[in-house]
Image 1 (cartoon, rainbow, N blue to C red):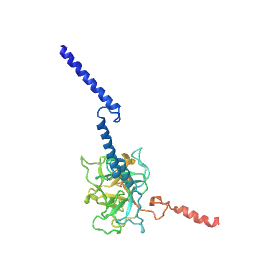
Image 2: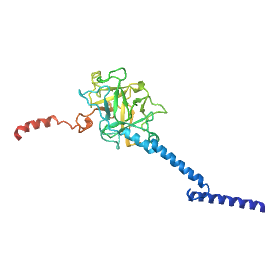
Image 3: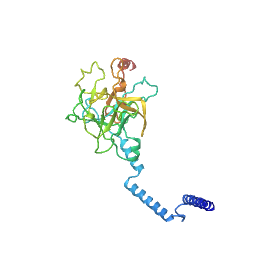
Length: 323
């Protein structure tokens, strides 16, 4: 009994001494020569050398994050349409026009532009774009790296040729980077792959060149859709953008919010919404917005509205009397 009690007392004493040593090691810095002070000094020097080496090479997390943000938010110049139509090779913005959302009380208002949205965790870990890359609809109207798309050829068309209804095309985006192009793609919904909020067909960006990148434009009025087949697509006009492989329309869900690296934005998916008259709803409408030739505005959305016909007639009538 005495031997067991003595052994327990010695064990408790050694445990208490270990706890005191741990507390002392945590309370005092490496400058206090206590414990493994020499190893702590060398460890701090190695950590400082590693930090300075990464800073000189630009590999720090904050430096990578800053470079990616600068590329995505870099100011871009949209193509100016001289004949009023959209051409292969033009740089445009894909904008969902403003419309009231009847099916929900909370939604994002205004014109929404299609934007690339990298994963929030990947943004903090890398200064490059990870594929597949997500998409969202943002309220920004300024052409930047993350919302400026290039209309690309799909079947041997010539750059500069007019884009027509029913003709295949691809939409590429560089995201402000040089020498890299990601393509707007989609595929059938599966149990493992779908949109984040609506669970519908996902739309994403990838660097693989395939038939999943092909899209077609259609006239919004179904009664005139066949008549407009093969006609040039006017710039800054409402159109439907359908995926060739799945025949689903590009849609902006204004009532489904996404928490992104750039704030609260709306979800984008591939699904065709029809009303009671079998007509596509405004959430499926898009515009290929081009640049404004004036220097005081960047896009045609900033152009002031022309006066109405009745207002113009009144100004002409009141002109001579005013003189």
